[in-house]
Length: 149
Length: 82
Image (cartoon, rainbow over all chains, first blue to last red; front, side, top):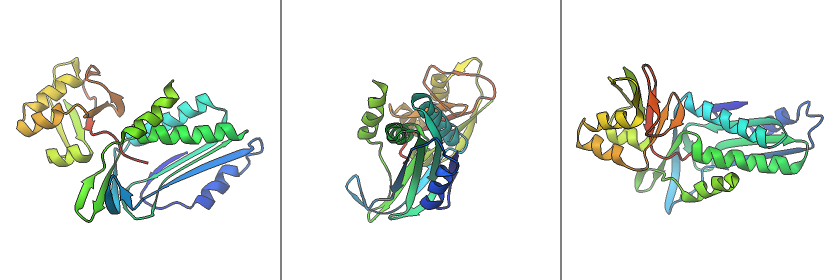
């Protein structure tokens, strides 16, 4: 299931939903991304996340679909917040269940790497010097490319 | 007629979130860009940037992607979510 929303999420609730009736699953891996204080050398006070309604959901669905084709997964949950966020706010949640841990670890990382490169979200940071758009990071592109070898 | 959407820094610098173009079909993303670039120096400069991404009907596209009547086209900078 995929959600793009302004409101916060509770990792406990999400975890319980993932393991409910998961009788064949032996592993759950979850990831949470947070608003960090320093980015690209700037001191960050908060950020605003913009997205492309419709395409963002479609893109996330396609990423999850690709992960399901590569690994035997049970449930997959992706939540991405939009709008105004403060320092240390939760931004993104990815939770994956699988029969064994390796698939769950790999799929969770794969989904994050693809999300960072393909899902249409844009971050604008509020710093002491004013507001500025976050620049795309080449490191994220390399992280995705390793899955394409 | 086709609806064009802009996002992120590109939207902010162009100064509008959406516009419309009249095209002769079949058209392409490259032709849409050329037509928009005729709107002035700012448009010319912003859409000439090598890192401008495009989507057609909410799927990532390239300059060669075909455009037909009613297709929704979007231009935006590299994505920075997560």
